Image (tube, rainbow, N blue to C red; front, side, top):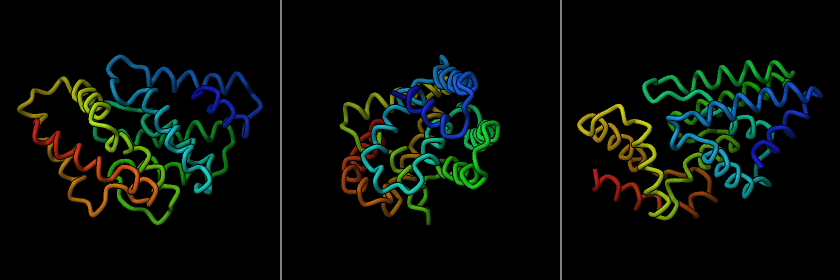
Length: 204
């Protein structure tokens, strides 16, 4: 489904199937790297599933799809500029197939918005970042797998360093007036997300 969706997206801008396949192979390779336990193709599949639920509310679907595929294309747990580097790579790849500059710029904004997940004036961006955080509001069983996978991605750090940092991230979300900016995701996931975050903090 992911590959099919991506290739169909690229067909809107390029007739070169070999180039589209090359771009997909790069995405697949990056998201399948050995040290990716959460920021993986499964994350992309879940994101696509969540976004399809709100597709009628999204004005620029192609932009959101590009953001989906490229938002974590560069990911290194030791670095703090993953979003910036992902946005840069997205720009290069989109330029290579002649995507209009307006779509490219909006895509970069959406990718960079996943750094802090703050409310945005653009509702498409809010739907995208809400979907990116949707794992927070899943059942405790699903959430448990998520936070354990995140811990694996940061396995180079001992608990003494990881736990306070992780707690700070969780408290950042709990301190928000609301985690989810859109009514759809707020109504569906907010209460469960807060329970999950509080429970993980208690376990740290």
